[in-house]
Length: 224
Image (cartoon, rainbow, N blue to C red; front, side, top):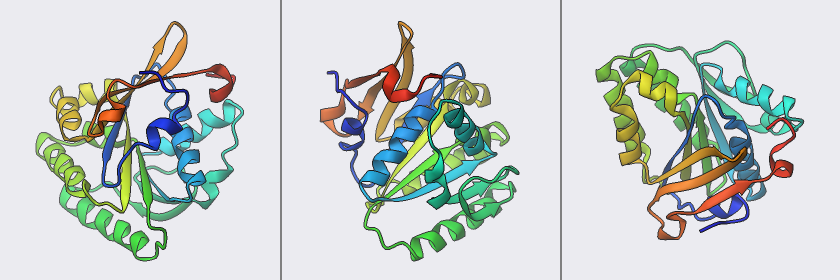
């Protein structure tokens, strides 16, 4: 089934979901990220961004070069993990340490933001998570997957993970299947006949099964 805009997909996501958005290294995921950001803003949802190893800076530069405004970042709280290039309102800047320490520090930073959040619904966008898997060992990777799983079902929020599947497959052949298995919705960004298409490969919501949204030139900026 073909939908006309990405908002039609975002609107069907359910509170508590963990959503994986897959893309390859030869595509620009920033535009889909941007449209998810604007959708959450229009719905007056609280937005939190997890920025791993300066991935958000890369997204911001791509959007600016595409001619899109990035002013919205200035009002968003960011949990930054590693990296040296701040974007947005960095609420916490965590160093990349061993998994156990990183987990405790992340949970502390997340709870701090949640404690001062008045909005009933939160959208948490995560960029660069695949880089954590790349620099970790197998045990740490399994622990990270379990941490992702532990946040699933929290009906105050919807979490969107933007995942470079090429990099993830280099990190470990088992990682992408495990992520897809635990995700409640799997969305893929592809390019067909020189046109970007966003499609739903799996969803807990039967209305989204098999849905595809072609992105036209006007909606994604002249660079893309």
